[in-house]
Image (cartoon, rainbow, N blue to C red):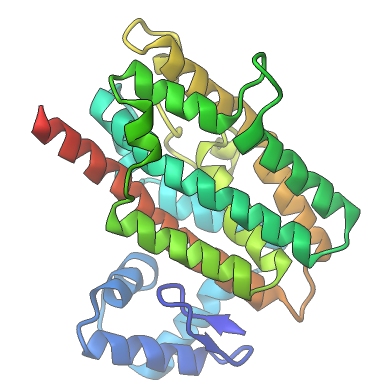
Length: 299
């Protein structure tokens, strides 16, 4: 199936003509999310259905690559290339309000992350997949005692070190963009296959992968000087360092698993679920910035 990366509408396998018609119809209705995706990923020029169909086909084309390399290239172009995501730009300097927004909105991301991993476990009998996701659940939410707290606990402690109340983080209501993204991820996990869910979720770990320079990344996830400078709290450094070190192996291992089980029959499904997730992730990262601005304006 070929997916619309914006709304998730699915079309028959290889049918980029229908997908092009869908985008042009949405653009004709001035649907902002569809227009924005086309402008950002395909073209800003008004073109006809046949030309757009060809460009979409090329966008999905593997060009001799495996699904792992295709996802990495697409992700780098979208988030950490020459025109990086605004959140990545914001993280090139130390900004406590950005980090406060990060702490609140990411809490909701991690709660969904655990649900998505659980769906993967429930939908497959492959031992390597289940083992990988069980480790993810332990690392992200449970931890391994005081010496190895969960990523969620490190996130909360970062927020507390920046003046946020633990209870206010845990009981917060996600901003609309975060809520939409969470609904997208939950819909993928509950309605689609385990391999699509893995592609949708674990591709997002690439955002913190410090190895992406060899894939064309121009910006790190955050300025590494934050880890050694005197401005950041110890808790900020602990949280950022944990993800900075862990996600190199995690994102690659997951993509290796996806490539192992990807077939010609499910390739477009995997691509589509990844693209739908990446688009939701982009909006969610904007929500981190929005929350930070809201906190700043209250001060």
